[in-house]
Image 1 (spheres, rainbow, N blue to C red):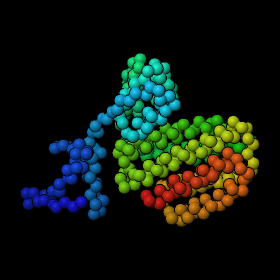
Image 2: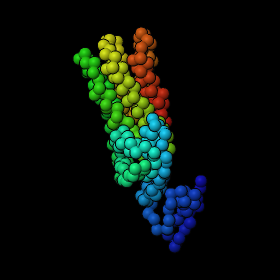
Image 3: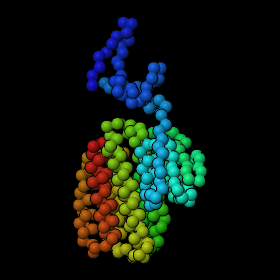
Image 4: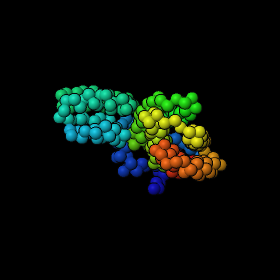
Length: 296
């Protein structure tokens, strides 16, 4: 859209804000908004304004296994307060035990026999977002390195790697929630970054499934499997560096390695592990790299 500059008092130039945007952001007379100068561009940001708290009331009676996903979905959507109703009083124990630890910044602020209220008690900040996003990368990197180290030592118990995925999920949920509430620092890149974070969470799941398969079935991975896991770990390292410092040469390198790793996996005898290895390899290219090119 275009706006005409209006001159006031023979000195000051004024540009009006779009009324639709003003209403959506809840801006009123006297409010302060942030203006950032970038060359020929001026970026107007309403993030300095206090946000309106939004809440929802939901009856989770009978949802059983969907309770976790329902509450998590509401959290990620950006709601600040969730009022839960249920018939079984034991549901509160499930919420405290299985759900609350996954919702960074949320606490149960009141509870009764058949209801409770969980609410955001801290402000979501851009600094937290950047810090936790990098932490997700570091955790996935460590999962790969620890898996390789354990397998080289013939250690078939990889529970410590499985548990790491819990924190990846927590941090991913927070980052997705932040993007839904405030968007990425460059709003045009919000959708792509959202997809990348989902992809990172899927990588953590793939590592977890590989570790669980080896641990529960007491599999003794061959040198071939360890080599492929090592290749995937290096592939992820390349993407990690690419995310923070874009380089088309690295994009080509990752794409080339994808094909090379794919050939190795398809030469393996069919197994659950080969499926998860292939999934990990696919996610790096289809969910991470493809979106990375759009936010370079």
